[in-house]
Length: 442
Image (cartoon, rainbow, N blue to C red):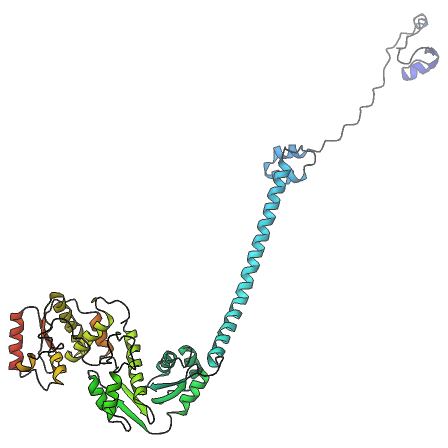
């Protein structure tokens, strides 16, 4: 068997050696003559080229398939073409976010520090304040006479000492007295010093009232200046006339005393005072005036009042109320009568003013008394008297400033309890007067 029969290929001798490899091989013409049919040439199939590796999808393709990965694609897509200005905007946004984070961290840090430090600062401040009030810097000042009311609690004593300038804080006094279990303190007259401090003031009060003779000066409401001088004159070493002369000299003055007035009539507060041996008339008078000014301040006398009166006029009206009213419930009603009559241009016709002129009344003034010529006789003179006619309480001061909203023009004593009846017409008043006479009240 020949090679051509074996693999169907022409033998190498049959190939034109000089011909190009790319030219097709030609079959020999002698093949037909040999009786051998020419077989078609079979070509070996060319090996298939290797399949290209599957291309890795780009980030853009993944973005088109899954929009939710857009954020990560923007950061990891190295093949994507950057948008114009995109990197700049992303950098600006990142820096803004970092600045916001820093601000939030600083704010949180500040809040945390404030929460931790604020209680410490408050405790240190309170401790410093308390130590300062216990022992204020500088030495004690001038002597101050203080009357502690009998039965007063630590709060009332602390307020009194603060008002007198002995201590700077009533609250600190109460705290220290509570911690040291001091008080209640004995009532009486004490001599302390200005700016003495809480600790030393408590020690003085714990020691009790100063040794030596202590006298009681009792001044009920409604006394005239002359009656107060009588009581002071009963104290050993004191004189009625000397005290009265001093009280009318202007040497001791109230804050509510007009410049043209020198008398302290109505400007001494009614209370119980403790007087030590050695105290002068001026010492006593100063204490009485100071007590009045304090009560007048508390009653709001320095401010404008609804009645339209000056401070001194309000004191004058209060003295009329004090002398006429027997019950607290009648004070604003009597005040309304006074203000209504002043507004209507009517004389006040108050018996107490006539009694002041004649030195007191055992009963209602007589017709002769009512005819006396005096600037205090409100039956003959319009308006208020020139000065108060007695000492006054805080309740009368308040009533003088805030009269009741009533149209009353008259009143008369109607009951032994001290209750008055009020009316708006003369006829009604006359009927009430007759009724009071039948009861034996007039």
